[in-house]
Image (tube, rainbow, N blue to C red):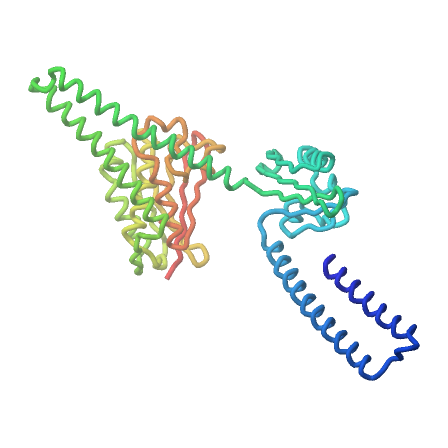
Length: 392
């Protein structure tokens, strides 16, 4: 815009000089030819200026559209510390209109304000990372001086909260899978060393140790298979075969599969009947049964001998909500939001068997059906796992 203003001012001075010279000259009075040439030059200059203005407005509109859609907060402040521009992301981050406010009032965090002041005083770019405890946000700010604004500054604030959370999930994933692999591998190593030390020739110990090796190998194979299943489900590579499924028949089938395990654990497993028939759901029967089996397996594993596990279903709006209720040890309230993460298990269940992937797989299967899964629990009083599936 400064360049356009300079061009306009230069053109105006040139025209004024030409007209003044023509008026002062007595030897060369203005003629029709001179005025025509002047008009032609003016029209050319005006057309060129109009083209430049159109191009500048187009570029300005394109830049404004980019800034409006940008996820990063962009703030421009003048030398007096007043905000002259703020994109929608900046106002959303700060929670109030920013134009005309002071930088201190807009940023409202001493680390960001200090970084802006350092940039203003030194004329050097500044980078600042901080955590906002109240909102649990992780922010990174880049502040560069605006040379044309004479001590003004451009501030770009990026919300890194999601990236930090993903980094936490990645770190937990590596830690958990290392834990899951370390136990069976250490057991296999100990068993192999025992066999090499002479147990292989023992007619009683040899077969027993070989059986334990087979058990550990099966556990590793299950872990690998569930990791592959989870990867395929998350990437949408698992094809779901949808058809009409009767909810109570699905509950009975899953209960029959887990009946023997429940009897061995001394836990009663029942299916609660409904007074009226339930509407059919539109689902992949095999995958939904896998969800129920995972939930029943967890319920049995964390329910003491003599306890009970109850399966039920009921209609809620345009969905059927399935429920697996147990009288087990329950889940602490602070652990409940994370139970559907990969490998995540509460501390007291660390000694239990399983890979820690069942609930994560179940969550993705249910969401692939257009439903949702959640849990309610009170420590020491049992848990209820719910998931909803749309009806036909």
